[in-house]
Length: 515
Length: 92
Image 1 (cartoon, one colour):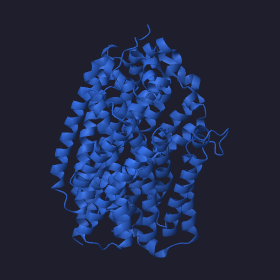
Image 2 (cartoon, one colour):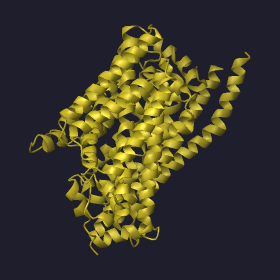
Image 3 (cartoon, helix red, strand yellow):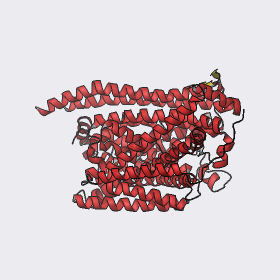
Image 4 (cartoon, helix red, strand yellow):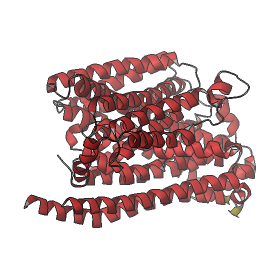
């Protein structure tokens, strides 16, 4: 049986989509209005007053993390390449146990708003915070580019409005959340989004499975009947195992260095709640990625590869097309609105973490030496938010039509090599020094940027060179060990007695809590 | 007191590192199997279900299990020792 090629209404304005979209915007702006009245202090603006429960934060973490790239991108990848796409589904989850075991609780006990709080604890503030802020802004910028370009493309396809208008729309709505509602509004937007995304994916999965007697194996074997047994087996995605391993390392350790994810642990009252929130997040995110198995193969069988490719060369419309086949334009509209909500929640979290680095790390801690009135801190935070919102919109428009899929990999590589080693060493190791921290962050970040510039993704795919100077698409295999090695060697070469003496206090606070 | 806090910190690191290693081996075991045992991964256990798909799903379930193990350990053992230390800290 060849699947029928359905006529699709994707690309035309969809009334249901616009309806759901307006309801979502109205509801989230109402939340923002409610949150704005509760956002008077920096603790409320950056950390939601530390009053979010573990379970709520688990949903918000899931909402912060599951981007449109994973919903639409992985479903599309599975529908196009079958099993190979599933390698990504597993990779995007395995960073979360690492966050739980190594990072979440020490981070909550040692810091206030940013991960630089933890690294700079007992070290010299100025150099460490400057280095950490650069790492944060690099990760946030690359991630924002990927999200904004994705937003422009998807919203144009699903709502039939222009690319530029889509990007500006996302930027303005996101700014409204962050500027007025701070972390309280951002948290609730992320919770609403997580519920919608998981609900939408569950609905699509169940209606897909209903056609196969609720047996996923039946669906897989149907896919193999139509497209050949190789869709269920490793294909050319893993032709170079070193590429797969390097990307795997970036995904596994990058999550624990993503500033917008780390920042969420400050929104809960204590370390125990931080622990619970990762437990919830891992459960939710894992369930979502298991569903991408069903969505991807479901789209492959029920929509058909040709029909998916006809709408979008990248295969990104697989999940929306599946929705249309299963539930008509009504379900398509709902899924389109969910995709929009997905992008908004991620962009809001990214902007807030960038604003925290600019105002809390650079302005307050470095420029004002930790001594600035709350009203000034809030003013700087909001100005930083506006600046980042404008930058996000400009980057989105600047990178129009570019293939930005590698940007997320780049963000993970910088997070895993620039931020993660310094964070772990500062928490774990008594002998870690200011110079070691700065050198580790600088080397990890710079090496990631350089090696991605020399990678096949940039040199061959983008610049059209015959061969790349560096063989791996993702540099993490080299740059994560480099980040650790530089941090350790520089610290050993020039010990910092004051810092190692202060480790006892850090250890006590890490275990016992502080505020 | 500092000694006991340090020994609790060490106990936490031992559990954290052991479980991190477990997830590391689980995931990279899967990646290496996919890269170097492609034929075995392509073998169907029943029609429609290859070892590759089954193991991929098991990696996700394994990640769940390790987080559950950690949370169970921390809720039971770590929190008990920590609150015992905290109550002693309050009355010197």
